[in-house]
Length: 286
Image (tube, rainbow, N blue to C red; front, side, top):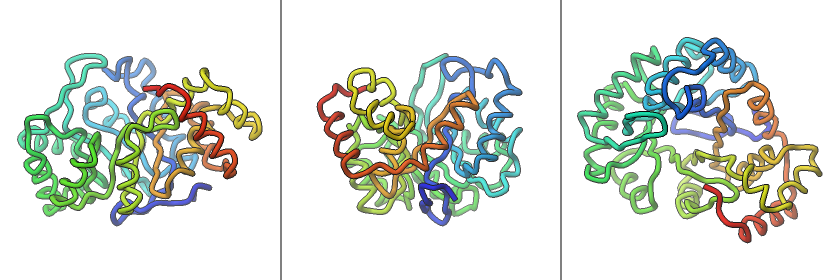
């Protein structure tokens, strides 16, 4: 078990520091990585380090991340795999929304095939469609859950209003929104998740690494722990809410090992207050 403890995601229990598998693809999250064998080695090292929650999406690559995960880790003994559907790709760093029922049915089948599973542990709507009723999108996922092809349902990139609507439509067990020490625009969503006991999976959790260039507070805390700025940013996330499940991603094993070690860092109340004050004063990093 991670030093940060565990968290429930529906009927599953995972350690509170996971791995985001977006960066194991090519530049711009497009195409295969330059070193596919290295990506497989990285994924196996994730599990060796005790990480038991891996997050991906059909749009990472597209398809590349899911295929690499399966090649490295299937049949996933003791590891929870989460994936997402609802975004399409037309090139590097280009993302378009498609949360239509037809698209979601198609990409769900593709994820099941690529991940080599009959049921996906956590399937997340990647983004509500601007022109698609949320009820229509989530109906596909609840139907697949009834059919036994999805174990748990999550949602990503939502407002409080969208999350409240989603909770009326489906048994939502997780939310994945952008959030970090120096980017707390989604604080209201996190607050609702904390109140309802819903796992909150922050993406772009290490934006504070760049914000550290603007303020010395996080660097001072890092020095006192013999840690890096990124490790303190992760430790802060873990201390912020009991439902927090960071998924820092990387394509390098040394960065992976550094991130995992952050789970053992315990910040004092004074350090948390110092970091929060610094974040309040600094411009947000996104």
